[in-house]
Image (cartoon, rainbow, N blue to C red; front, top):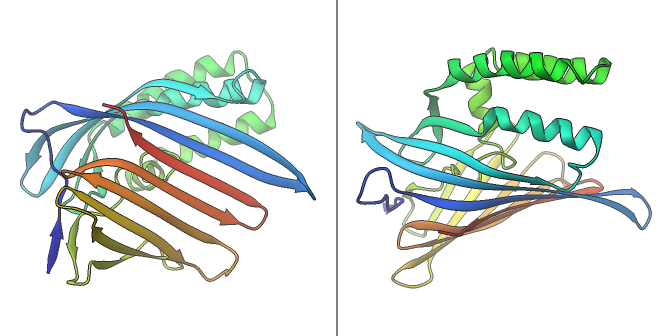
Length: 239
């Protein structure tokens, strides 16, 4: 079998800084598009290896939303701070498997919810609060949420571990969706992994490409096309 693993820093506690970006482009009517951009600066620190699990600490140091000057944009930015610090374990394939600060997240949400209630009212706000409260009832739901491309799924992407001799690997994302990975050694120090999904609905497609240098993830780009909406997610190593 063909194996590939992340090269963790020799000195425990050191990490990598990335810029995560999400671009949402939607066709409202023929030849008329709306576009929104969300950017985060994220520090990902490897703390230790415990048996077969890898301990990470994630810290979001900056948020920049294109619509943050609007009421809804400002509200969403405030909500984002709830997940600005995450302590987790990932497995050998770099999938999130456990949250160490799950209880802390629940307590932070109760405090943040009370503050936001003071200036935000209405059925839409109530519905949004209800969704977050339901999410935080179950650790598994939160892990699935954090694995989304709009959160930290560009880094914790399940791309490490065992590959077949031809560099291919298949991951089951859900009952309806499979992910097909193809790893190529571009040079002695550089590895490229191409990703593509198949879904029941033909017009919905997810595809991407990741670049690793010396075992460190340097870039990851994912594009999702769903009906009249196109979403582009990117990760870029900056230090």
